Length: 258
Image 1: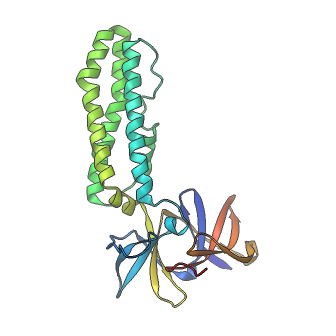
Image 2: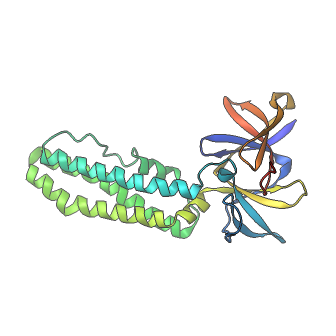
Image 3: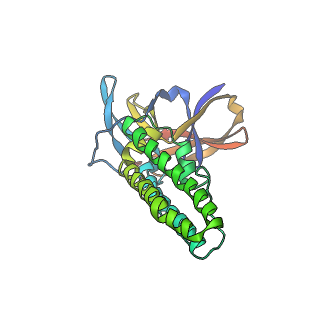
């Protein structure tokens, strides 16, 4: 019987032998190490030693969590500008409004619902963002009701109310974007692992999915060493509960020699 910690990074699932995992922690506040490679996110004090923390995303040659957030927030702004433009056009041209009045159905609403921060500063900004975002979508309900009665009244409601709520929503999107490092930290988890020399190091991952216990014959072992990126080897593939999981053999802090 073998036991693995199953974790998610972006849209992929990975597993690592639980014997190599000392602890699973919230992603710690890190001290930057600018002389290290981009796969090293920083270092922190763990028990009686200072250890390096790697970005698993960078280990497998993907964008970091922070980089993903920095790409996400401008898209959320663009989505809501398009939403407001559609509402204005609906009133000015008296055409159907085809965007959603449900704050939970848009990309931002779904992201807010899936995000459970632990940092107090992030929590505070998210509360304000959620409040104004819900107000924004629901303000369209009022506009569309007024539109059925009086187009001028509907337009005035946009000018007097919706534009102000929209500006507040964008303000808090900007604030949370400025906190991308904290947001990434509060969303991720850190696996404390042991290297070949039994020294500790950390690996930031997106989230822990499960701990599974399987028979060894369930693993589809690879015939030869399979490299994934320049810092990791793959041991096997596991199909579990209808999901394909890549089993990690080894993660190295230093780049593998050619």
